[in-house]
Image (tube, rainbow, N blue to C red; front, side):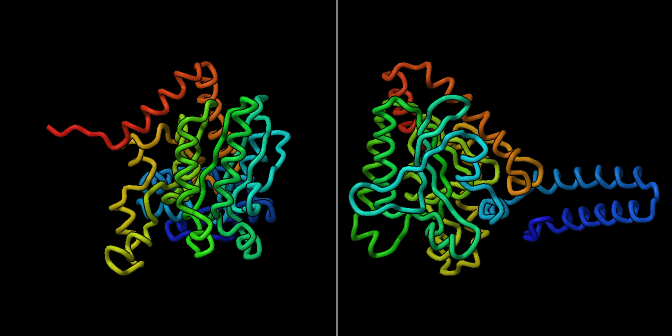
Length: 320
């Protein structure tokens, strides 16, 4: 694999890719015709990739959601929007670097972008606080939402966080209140809101910017009240049981679609979004555009009523 990071279940795919690469180089260097053999291996690779990725466990999907080469919010912004201008600060305490916000054009339409941002190297991870927002981050996001409402801009939100920051300072500055206020205010914002879960969606850290008219998930992302490690530590006092916890939590996109927690699963390119950022962005962008086109046509009253009913019906089931 070009990025040099290989998950355990990806090894058979990487080994076959390497074999194809070596065969191509040998054929070119020795001027030998191996086209048929290479094509045969490529077909085998395509079949193997589809077989492995169609049968992933929930824990393997969690691993993919955390892949360091997976596209993050700014990657999607770069590929899906034009003229993005980042705005900063909550006008009360600080600028939280774990969340990026600002207006942009999406398929020619003016929108407000809000998204949690991770990083790939140690320095940047610390700068972005591993995508974990502080209270000022949620207040910054809410400020941008209110700005979007004022100028009638649809809101596009990208969720990718292991949770809200659990430090003492965050609690002192009102972490729980900031998340609760966002949930309340988002429920009644008078503009369309499309939520995209692009990687990790953990607990209140995700829900603090997660109320909208449509909630969609990338195929290999996860969304849950707690991380598998956190759940395992509580139930079994052993974080090593995270794979078992992932199964019990039913945190994968397929589970959440079945439970009507989300509205749509966005398929990823073969091998996952980390192998094809452009392809993943195209697939996500098309789905977001479809929902926006639908919501823009609604009256404010209809939009708010549908949003309310969407969340009120979560968790409702009938037992005969």
